[in-house]
Amino acid sequence: MEDKIINLECIHLDLSVTSKEELLERLSKEAVQVGAGDSSESILEDLWNREKELPTAVGKGIAIPHCRSKSIKSSKLLFYRLKQDIDWDVNEKINLVFAILTPDSGNNQHLVLLSKLSRHLLRKDFLEMLKNSSKEEIINKIKEIIGE
Image (cartoon, rainbow, N blue to C red; front, side, top):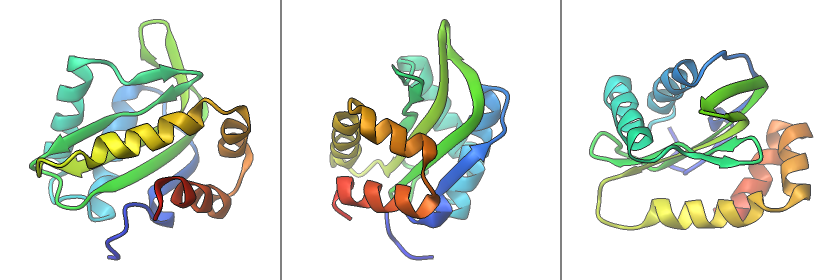
């Protein structure tokens, strides 16, 4: 497994899920598949713990679940474009998800990634690209944004 933060296996387009629970469960399993860690159960628990602190919906139909955890061995950024909106929080429906998973190593990599992505999520052209483009176009733009 290449040790990049994001690769094509981290991009999931037109996914059919019906709930936040289903998405986070799938995300935790796929995080293990792309080499983020060894235990999907631990990653799922860490994601839920973060959600309990402060929900991760950021508006405009976007959620950015993230965790910095001992169960994460290699930093990963996963992207999901959903077929239909799902309820994320009370009165918050989402259809685009960026998941940021980083080791609990004391650095601020997750904040740097969050900051870089957040600036672009304010741009209408970036959101349209995420909603309509291919995996290859999306990954190339994300890599450009995060400097990978």
